[in-house]
Amino acid sequence: MTESSTILADRPEAASFVEVRREGDVVVLELCREERRNALNTQMCDDIRVAAEAAVAEGARALLLTGRGDVFCAGADLSGDVYSGRFPLALVWMLDVLQTLPVPVLAAVNGPAIGAGVQLALACDLRVVAEDARFEVPVAKNGLTVHNWTIRRLSDVVGGGPARTMLLGARAMFAPEALERGLANVLGELPAALAWAHELAALAPLSLRHLKMVFNDDGARDQATPAQADAFQAAWNSADKNEARQARKEGRAPEFQGR
View 1 (cartoon, one colour):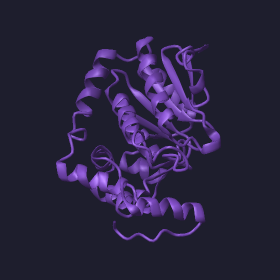
View 2: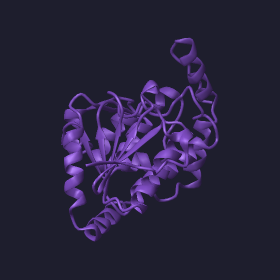
View 3: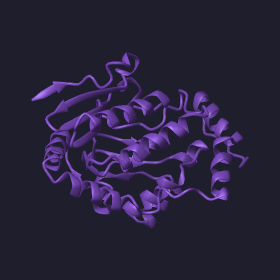
């Protein structure tokens, strides 16, 4: 039986970004910014984090995260506020919360997961992936980069070689390979993901909490070295980033200068 949730009732301005519904012990978080292909901005990152924490506080035994329409998440909304100072912080905070929640979080990857959409899927404990889905992190095409956690978590999940292909090579991974590599745990649609979420919700909560805690204690969340932090900021503050943004507006290929 589906119950209407009031998790975001005190934040009506956020209701169009994340729809929350409860089905027994499972809470479904649906990204519902379909007109932007469920791309993330600062407010949406905040909404996911707040809704996830509230769901657990209200007794959810499992969370299921999916996207409305035929796209899971098209990444950061590069036409929005992602170039502002707070977006990277809001994104990392949201990803960290999903990892540290004491209940399992599943992703129903119902279509393309691009950039921050891959990060969102990686922050979930398990992924049910549609057969026509793909994963892509094209930051090298956009003059941006990702923080250490993304690089290490992706390497841990799919292996170092495929992670390098996706990040350094800026190439996509499609659902069949994702299943082979472990980025997809199961191929299937939302009903299969929801059924699995209910199975997880019936398992021993303390066991799941411990397993999740140990799995995520993999060094991926260790603090970046000063040199790594400087390199991250250099990319986000670069002229190349601005060139990519301008080139996108003008419909041309960017001309990167390494500065």
